Image (cartoon, rainbow, N blue to C red; front, side, top):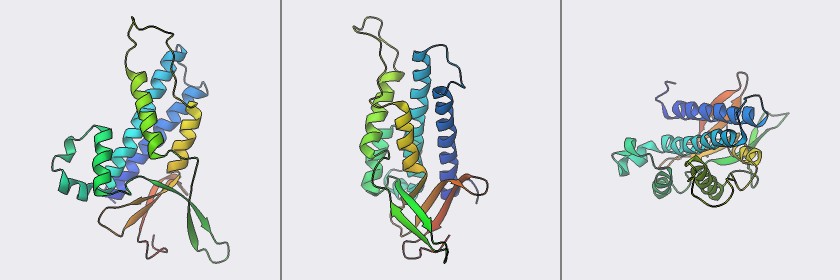
Length: 205
């Protein structure tokens, strides 16, 4: 599929997410050297924010046709919080839904189960986005108190939540029975891959 085709463009966005997750991990494990802790957390904050923006704009990719019908200048939309509000209006089920796929060893039939906890929820998304915004601003030299970066949770936990959300997830499309089953690491190349299916035809890939 050409990159302009929605599932392919969605996969491009998700590959960027993977790249930024790897960058954050290289900071956390020390393989990417930063001059000090503050600089490291500023770099991490930027990457986390970019990841969240990629997730939001990936939802726009999945729902572009319906979204564009409501907002003709959608190409100029860049405020993530406004974007999410607008997406919810055209598709209340716009947020990725993490799932677990199992394959029957005898028949090869696939079954899909929802993952109920441990992933980045919409509320987590908003909280982390706001935390990143605080870190990205330059510290006011006249502000009282110790300069302290607080993400609310350890960065490693945020990464785990993001990866649990996206590892295998379903995107439901507004105004369509079509859905995408998205793998962040699909064999044999372990690249991002989206299987296009209908909820009425669980065998279609």
